[in-house]
Image 1 (cartoon, rainbow, N blue to C red):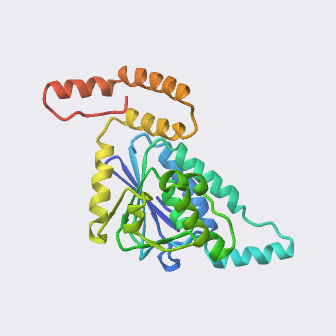
Image 2: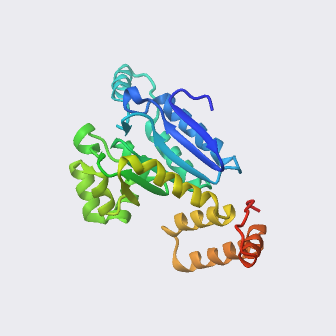
Image 3: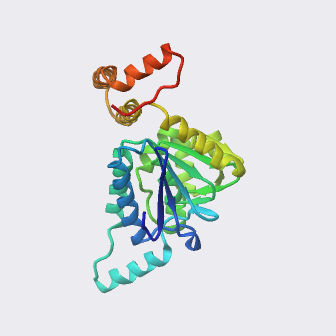
Length: 265
């Protein structure tokens, strides 16, 4: 795809979304905001894509918002001019990631600060390099509050006390510590990051797409659903997949000792 601040590649049912402002350590600006929304919309509408990998070019995953851009908006506000609505974009982007039917994997191989952490948090799975540095210095560094639903996600992933520690102190942790506290799924040597990520992506891409997408939806809505409503949803989802062509193919493949070929039907 023809973007200026990101890249979108597709191969064998896997879409790879790459932040591509390495000279700015992948800090996001207005152009990246709009391009990311467009790319996620593109992926959402592409039935051939079964899983999404998010990564970044250069030595940083992202250091958050472009501070030069923030400074220019401060000047615009002083003049009474309209400015880009970053909070609105963050909400739209977070919702777009959750509503994207394909599961997403964040592959973080460089320094991650602020949004550089909350963006991966909004992905369904996270893999980091062991030695990278991660921090959430919203209040301590730039005097703002956290975004991308991080105040909702973090306590559920790592507990209330640890979430308070990371958000209220801005303390830097390594990828290895992120794994130890449950912030990410896996922390591996940087040299192995792509291999481990690709293996996970291919495993998901080889599964039945309808079942994978419904499972993602169920897991997300279960965070807020009561037990009865979630059980009812599981009943409907199971009935749907039991009637699918992919289910029939899986049973036939198992009985004939061959690998199933799923079509998402």
